[in-house]
Image 1: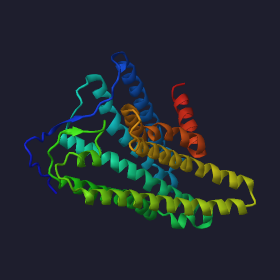
Image 2: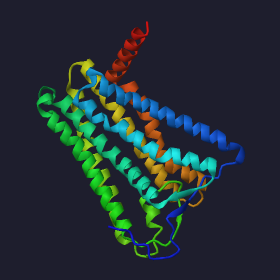
Image 3: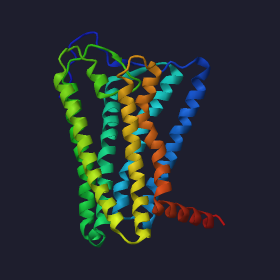
Image 4: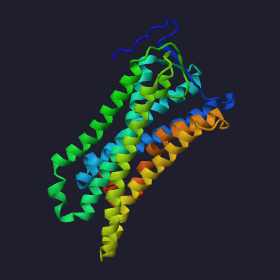
Length: 316
């Protein structure tokens, strides 16, 4: 649907909220944020490169996992560079179509994490609970279908979410957060009744949580049951190490998300603290995920050591 702009006060150049950074702290904040961003790009890029180039990682588990560092890269790149530029330039102006695109991609990232983690949990359930049938179940067609289902469902849900806000006539020009989101765009509307948008947003959030949590709880419950009944300690240890990274990632995402939501429910929280809690959703996991998976996934560690070893011999 094409958005309606019925009020002359609406401008395609929107003002966006800014961090209140002391003048002497502007460049330290900028350089710290830049280091965080490049660290995330480097680490997630290494994971992606290893999965693409190392034969030992050409397995269904890592084909599915590939979506996670890719989503992390897209999420942090969509948010952080523009935010850091705003902190330095103090312009705090965003073009309306760019704002819509940023909001859509950030929502796509958040929903994608839930569905990707559910897909990874399903893969681990088949690998650990049905090891003899793993390769007959997780065929290239199945793996491709799981990945397509995760991203396809996420895209379809977010398209509807943003189509609902696009239909509203706009008459305001101030984005209330330091990044664009669906709710910030809805608040540009001069229409009082946004009940449909609120209901769909709540249903969407609930659906993503229920689907992701249900699949993960079922998968890890069955994995735990298998580990307890398994007589070989090495097999139990391998299963725990394989699943722990996903559990840590999901727990971190939920904790950061809860902090972000709660920060806007209490009036006595400073505005800058609220903004920090909001951007943590899109920066914490892209920074920590490569470390978590590098430490807890033996195949990735081995692939990295082998790649470094080959590079060292290539230069000697």
